[in-house]
Amino acid sequence: MPDILLCTDLDRTLLPNGLQAESPHARRWFARAVSYPGLQLAYVSGRDLTLVLKAIADYQLPQPDYMVTDVGSRIYQRIGNDYQPLSGWQQHIAEDWPGIDSRDLAQLLTPSLLQLQSAQQQQQYKLSYQCVPAVDMAAGMAQLEQQLQALPIRWQLIGSVDETQDIGLVDLLPASAGKRQAIDFLVQSLSLAPSQVFFSGDSGNDLDVLMSPYRAVLVKNATAEVVTKALQGSKAQGNQHHLYLAQGLPELGLNGNYSAGIVEGLLHFFPELKSWLTAKRQGDE
Image: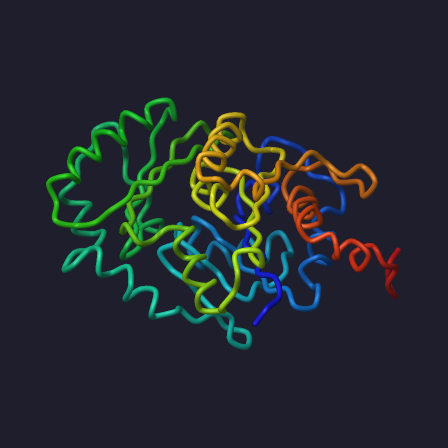
């Protein structure tokens, strides 16, 4: 059982693919932090397994112990050099969509303001749409909700915005799927307390976890809208003390964006890591 489970979103949280600048060496600090003894790492992403593996290679990221992919509709565990799906999770969320999957739903749902994403973005229990411009996303989600009311399934909609392209992203999932629910499943499987779990995110599809009892950081490059929603939601649920807003750590050369914000948040909640993180090691410059 790990002492700390670090769960992080990828795009514009760990990956520096937003509009703001990344601190030099920030990912090196992150890699050192996640090698802390007793810490296990989970990447939690809207990407599928192939695209998560591509990001790991492209950005030279540490290999995680777990991957929560497809906005929480799949969970993988690293076994040796391979990643194996947790079949128990798929069986669990399948109960919400009895006898139906995303291919069937794509034929039944026709929201005029939303367009289906590419086939690569669709999974058995995830139907993904996009909206251009992003300002129309709320109206498109309302169309979708109205059509879903007539179907005998349990569902949820998760919306987020890619501000780099002004695209709204909408995912239809089983009600028991999602990033927060998948992390809950891992936490229960590992017999962890909420205080042992740390999450980092930046966008609308991270809000459920950012507002939860888990310790969490919102990286500095998050939009003002997400910051406001995260603060209001965490306060409403009595979890405001579990949410930290990254501001930057000048003494470590970290500006609070992307992985710099993750390291800052980790040190805020687990200060015992600082002496270990900053200790001089053989091979350091």
